[in-house]
Image (cartoon, chains in turn orange, blue):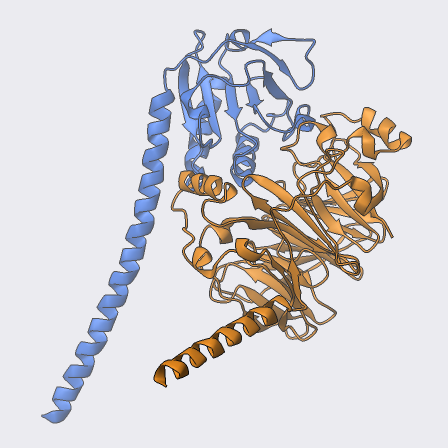
Amino acid sequence: MNKYIFILYLTFLLFLFQGCKEKQSADPNSIKVDLNNRQEISFFDIFSKIDIISLETNDSSLIKTISKLIVNNDTLYIHDYNMSKVLAFNKDGNYLYQINNRGMGPGEYTSTSDFSIFNDSLSILSAIDNKLYIYDKKNGEFIRDIPLPLIKGAYKSFTDLDDKTITFWTYDYDNRLKIYSKSTSEIINEKFPEKDNIFTNIGIEVFPYNRHFIRVYDNRVYKITGNGEIIEAYKWDFGKLNNTPKMIENAPSAKSRDEFMELIGRLNASEIVNYYFTSGGGNSQYAYTMLNRKNKLLNIFHHKSSKKTYIFDQTLEKSKLYPLFWSDDYMIGYIPPIVSDFNEIIPDDILDEENIQIKRNLSEYDNPILVKYYFKM
Amino acid sequence: MNITKTVSLCLSFLITISVCSCNSGRKKQTENENIEIFIHNTITEMENENMGKQIVNTKVYFGTDSINQTTLHELTNIPRLFFYFSNNTCPPCIDQSVEIIKEIFNDYESNEKIIFISPDYPLRYSNNCYGKKLLKLKNENLGLPIEDGFQPPFFIITNMDMKVESIHVVNKMDFERTREYLVRISEILI
């Protein structure tokens, strides 16, 4: 009798477990992706056309590296973190102005950490000065500076949520995310503790688009609500290849630069975790991520309405992508310094005649090249 | 008696707390000092390792003017201050070094005795990098041990045999040392 009760009990547990598993896999916020199922994706499966934007190159408009791009009212605003400046170009790439106010005088900053555009203002964060510097986005004229509350660690990046609040990402590992009230000039909420390890030292655009928020090691993509709450917008599900909590928990930290470079090598080879995220994006049509797995950068485009998912490191036409900015109709990427051959990003097969001519005139002495990808509607 | 005992206990407690705080502050100060000493020693080692080394003679040109080439040997026939930095060097280190150069050599942009070298700065900066044309090396490096691995910015002066006669590696924790070095060098370069 006891034996039968025991068997009944085990059977019950089995059903319970199966039920939970099925419930998990039916999670509507979960985007299932098979990372081993690489497809042959044509550029034209996702995009209808492409435009090359050659940014004007002269002594005033030189860009060392593009750290961030924001497009606002057809103006391209570029943060050159290395040179601590923000440059503005029109949609054709003609230079408009730059904000390069390094110094110790009024309106001058020691260095720039991040920038944002909201309404008519362009705000620059200087972590060293612990301030926001506000400029007129039309002409780069200085308006005022805003001292920020002192926090543990330093501010790193930010995004304007709305008229009333700003979200900051910081080096305070007890609460990395801080919600700041513009009216009271105070931190009104803080959350998201993190362990300081190799992941937290990998650069990633934490706020890739439209109130969304991502982490290098986390499958979840978060959204920040109007009242500063963090909710899970969706999550990537790679099945058996999902990084386990133990992998993340046990991730090492580097004590020196050499050790850091060695760990990065191992991370890229998927020796510490199965993958890590390098970029995020999205719009009303797509959820997007780029991740590093076994020394390859994989693009994952998930089409929300058809539920189709495209996974590739390069398209059939041998084109790679490095997205910087997302909007509903288009995405803008660039040709990063590590890519020496333009054909890796803009092969002739994906260009029309006009853009082939533009490409022929490009030179290694030019500013970094931007590429505008129009989504198929 | 009891009051005296209580007061003594409180006093002892307060003294203990004060001593512990001082020690903890001193410990942090000691840790910071240790880091500074470590960096200073590492930089001194780098300088010693590269002192007296011969740089490689190679064809060179300024900016994008590849038609008007010369050799590094020709440039070292008189004392010149070479300021070397990599694309991977921390930008504030380069910025601050250039600020000090500007302070001491206010004609540095046109001064032919001051030469900026970077083997890997983006080509678009070739004709205007902090106000100067970059010296382009055919060999892409000087052949000095300091160019391997982690590259802080550094200054060198060579003799006519192209051997390093003076070298200063920038320490971002001690820019005053860089200022003192450049003040001494300004007297040689005049």
